[in-house]
Amino acid sequence: MTRGWIVVFAKAPAAGRVKTRFSPPFTPAEAAAFYGCLLADVLDVTARAAAALDLDAVLSVDPPDAAAALAAQAPAGVRAVAQHPGSLGERMTRAAHAAIAAGAPFVLLRGSDSPCLGEKTLRAAVEALEQADVVVCPDRDGGFNLVGLSARVSAPEIADLFDHPMSTPTVLRETLARAARAGRESRLLPPGFDLDRFDDLRQLAAERHADAAALCPRTIAFLDEHGLWPALESHGS
Image (cartoon, rainbow, N blue to C red; front, side, top):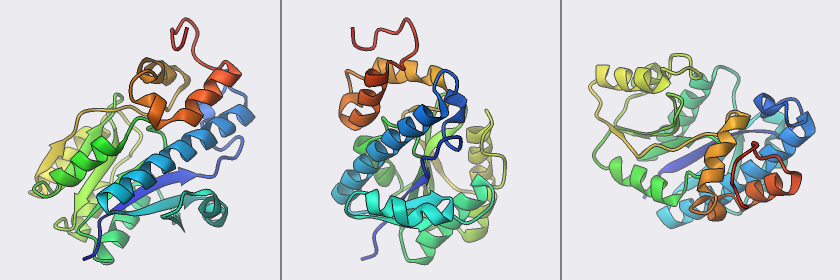
């Protein structure tokens, strides 16, 4: 039986190309190293969850010529593919189409910026897709850090679902509205958070003695080692 897919969207951790909204106070080199730790943690969690949930784990890489290098660093069981050019919505559409065209009963799409998105949430998404057509894990800025699509959703419906700007405060609302317009049932999971800006580290600090310590140890260790947590945050004292 063909398995569901989980796709992680990622960039090569190059200075000046990743986590630019963290600089300052991070230097570009620190921002790239931070993102490298974040990506490694996310891939470890994803690989473990994929094994536990019997999913195919796919790393979708930008730029395309970095796919081989990131594949060599990825955990066992994770295969890397090159992202095609286009907007984020277009790239998400292509990834979903590839999974469903390969016979997957569903596909989960996640970013590499959500260090506390773990197996519990991924399992809930898989279970929800047995009944719902679209499953979304919201984040705090009006977007989402995980979206799951059943193979019941047609290719044109998938394209329409993501045919709008993806980095705005209305992303979640617009995505759900488009699913409803297509007559597709959506389900929301408990919200999570992305690390998009320096101040978002306050939320990670608040989680570090709960799930975060197990889910993103490299990320936390990097921030500790370099003293890069936001000021006045009691993250470990």
